[in-house]
Image (cartoon, rainbow, N blue to C red; front, side, top):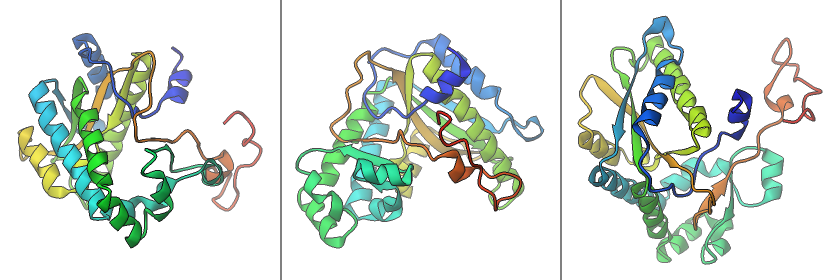
Length: 266
């Protein structure tokens, strides 16, 4: 596969993976491309933990599901991320960013416009929608053949200092290398984000993974091979739109947007 093709096809996998284990060859390849990412002064601050044990994955999945239920029940998730939620194709076309929730269970659809109000929150809680979402999340994570914990060396990751920015920048490059390579390997990948929304849940995962004091757990991803027929899960979102070049590229100075590229196949 050509590199540009892989970049253009890169996306988040919201649905389930095949149950097949990720081969050791592919695991080694993913770690190799991560290790070839750029880093300041070749510091290579990233560390990774590969998780295949079914019991461990199940425990992390349970934490993830309960985190989603908690964050959605108390309203913190909707309050924090409401600027990124879109509920119509027209809205998505106008903003060209965020997430389009175009696939929701029938019982949930009437309340999408009220998701960010106190009344809407009460209705969703009464209908146990946060519990439904949390259960779906738990199943999705539990069905993943492999989880990947991403950590940073605390000697490099020192919040408040430039080294912290450099190490996060380098970690992002390493993760992007992994992400693009999954496209080449017929795999999918998704950020397991909800435990980070509830600090005590994130601390629980750190204890499960026995993260030492000299490392900082930064993220957990789920990975696996994609089924030929990728069915969308019961609750799903899409994010295919991208901003036009004139919305994020400037020419010469930041007062002059780049024009003329918007219709060039972006």
